[in-house]
Amino acid sequence: MTRLFDLDMQLLADAGLMIIAVFVLFLLASYLFFNPVRDMLKKRQEKIQGELDDAAADMEQARAMKAEYEEKLTKVDREAEGILAEARKKALDNEKRILDEARAEAAAIIDRARGEAELEKKKAADDVKKEMVVLASMMAGKVVSQNIDTTVQDQIIEDTLDQMGQSTWLN
Image (cartoon, rainbow, N blue to C red; front, side):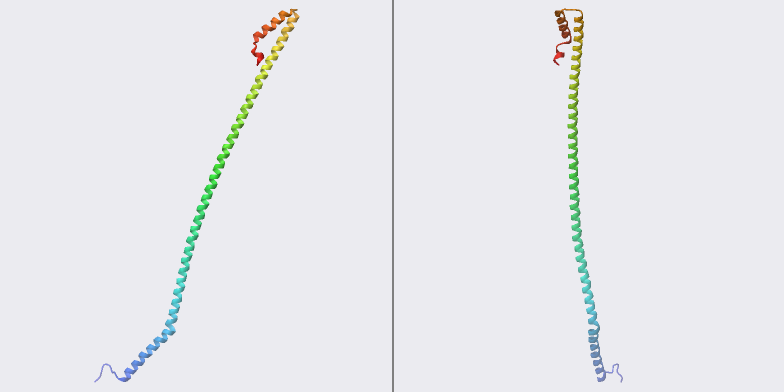
């Protein structure tokens, strides 16, 4: 009779040896191939993790630099606004100073013009007085030429002064 599987001792010994050989081959392959591959994968994983950590650190550093730059920009904006405000204040102060100087100069010009007008008025009054003196001397000449006595001459001068008015001599 023939069996499907001829199990004899030789077959079992061969099967046991084969199992031992496969196990030894597995251990040898594991030691020679799997462990270096595992080490390579572990190193690669550590390298990737290190790159990820570096990237995270770089990202954090970039965020910190961005925050620093934004702070500096804000500070620069505040400084620029302060400079502009100071420039505006100086411009307003300068405008006020120029207007005050112009007003003072205008007031000085007006005062000078009033003084000159007063001088012109006095000069005109002096000219009128000189004309009156000339007119009085001409009248005196006529009086002398007509041989009028001193009472008539005094009377004529008094009449002339009364006609011109006493206030003209007082100005």
